[in-house]
Image 1 (cartoon, one colour):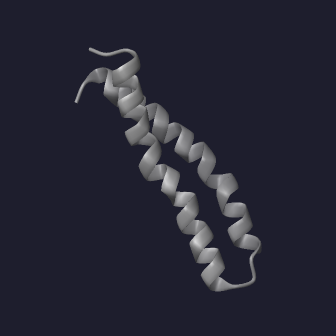
Image 2 (tube, helix red, strand yellow):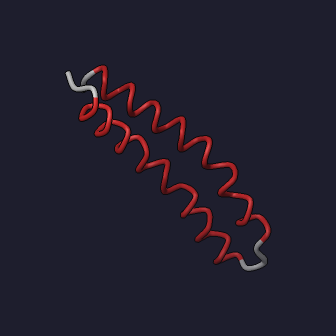
Image 3 (spheres, helix red, strand yellow):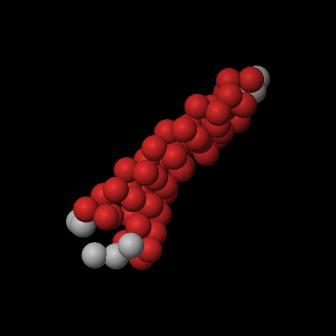
Length: 64
């Protein structure tokens, strides 16, 4: 792993963390447990995707 890629992954993780809290708000308001669970999972999805995308974009844009 390159330093550039790690910086991109860290930036992606920071973006995902900032996105996580607002995405959980609708899940707390839903009356059905199943719908709330689906919304929680949808809120976690950027936590897995953003660091991967950040790693790829940083290596592509800046390179090593």
